[in-house]
Length: 242
Image (tube, rainbow, N blue to C red):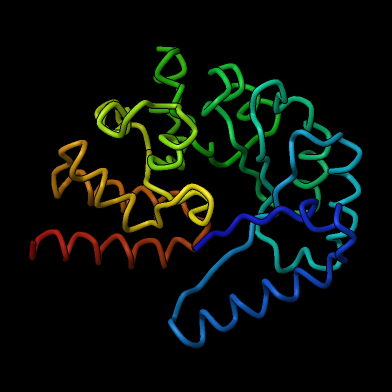
């Protein structure tokens, strides 16, 4: 699991970074010991807040950075361009953090370009509006930039009217490294398995397409290459047995 968290949601209410972070840490430790679930944490900046607030939270996180894998950018996309956070993302990279960003869900393809070229992201979160720009589609396919697609969330946010209209299958057909994710399931509904099963039904996905989506999620993960290979081989084995 690579889990997003929004420190500013808590610090704005007067909760200390150490307080909520230690709770997250304890939960992830229990998940590993009880269920074998390993995880990375991705600290996100709220894009509707000023850039200086993002710098402040990066400073507050300083002594916890060894436990944080990457920084991200989330919250309301419309009107809040990725370029607003170019400097704070550069500072995060200097500190050894990877970068990801929400772009191209509610916002236009231009936001995806900014996330790639200015924020230097490893992955685009959502990115489904890339299909509006043929050159961007070509670039994403050529560079194999991962898109962390969240189908059921996209329906809740009216990016698509219904799941059968979703372009996930189109992204696969265009050789883009798209995958299925859950997105705030407590708010939008739909944990990971439900996203898979409903997409399989509504988009008529084949076993090989579902396997490719799962493979893409491991290829795009921040796991060591040796672990990626292990999981990819396991998927191939399961597909062969299926």
